[in-house]
Image (tube, rainbow over all chains, first blue to last red; front, side, top):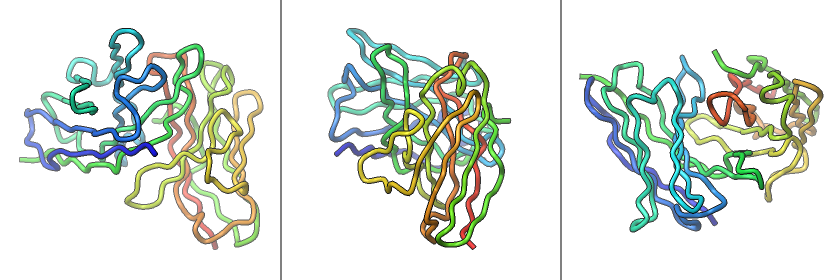
Length: 126
Length: 111
């Protein structure tokens, strides 16, 4: 049974860095058949994919263009978890943030997100 | 503005069937059989209900079914129950700059 447990602060000041962690149980962050994603949800932007990390003989990362200059997603194999860092946040980054496991097909295309973390409401405010 | 287009709301009475549509392009819905549907209750995380257009994960009721025609996918819920009242989001693999795109969500009200 795969479970994802998110942790991190719910309040971040403008211009600072948002940091969240997603602990994995029931699977491995180094899995060759899964990928580990961060998404967010807000009334103004809906559900938005932010980026992912996955291992296929080596580590890969992909990021959404909208946040590419500010985002880092890192795996932590020693603790079987992955993290999100979003720099230089503004009030527009206020949202519920989710981590999720991506399912991949034979062609390494991500076909769905089958397990999600519980969500973390992050408010950007001074 | 979401990449996939869904109606903002649908409603139905207990026992009835409803269908939610999801329209995309040939770069996502129409080009691949990787449409998925998520149910989200207030304050909860999305839950996968349908993947690969029409497949149900283990534990999901067979009252939920999915289909696709050209650039439009559909989610049908039969035998509506009060517990089905939630927001529903479609998603698709995309060959664009992001690997996954979402619809704006449809609020289902069970009357």
